[in-house]
Image (cartoon, rainbow, N blue to C red; front, top):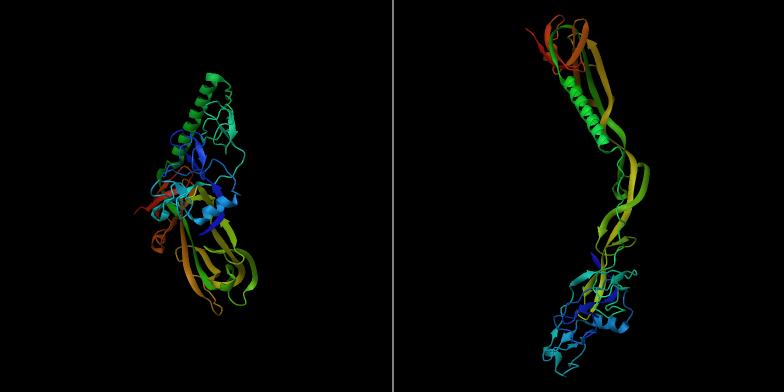
Length: 361
């Protein structure tokens, strides 16, 4: 990922004495005058625009502030002696920097409500414009419309009728399914047998394929291409599409935050469709008949062709009380038992299909 800089925003710190929110670059509290403590925690404003103050931005770019080792006063990174006590700052301690402070939220004109007087203030305000009380960060949300009651027609009688109808439907479904899967056993006589055998003919088959242009075969027919994302890069590439995440703020240790985005770059290439050949089924020869002597079909192969998969299907036809039923047999050996006049025990379901069959010796 590439970290893209969007600009700088002034952070905030909350006075531990009076709870007033103050600008990050301000060394004393606006509410009570207390000095910003060395361990003050910087936070992102509720909403803010990127700073246009060149002096503050330059200080943020210069490096984290330094706290004097003798009096604790906060000095810029370029200072050599403390502005408050004149001590040498080589023994001072630089503020921590580089940590993620929070998401960057541009100013959209939202409001915050004063907890003391109820006045709605701009989200960027740190003190109430009416009473001067410190403001929190709770953005005023639009009041939700009260849910409207849904009219119910029919009352209790309607509910009872609905329940009765539902029970009848469920009972009918249970009866239907029970009847459908209930089977009856009987003895049937074989009155016929039929078979089908087929052989696939294999050879080169024209097909439409897809690949990147540099992977397509030379001289591919009917070549048609369109740009698509081939890979993603962490660094900018010629012609790439920049895709960036949500902006967030990094602490510079100066009371200013550096607003950045993590970006990646989608690199495009030509993805093509074309005609080529691959090994597949070019034809199928089939032979069908009745009786117990199935035959494989003959096949004439062209140049470059060969025989492929063989399939076979066998069906035994029986009769019970003048009505005929049929059922498949898996192997030619089982099919050989389907002799005319032989007796079979079969199970017939509610749909009239044979679900089980066994020859009676």
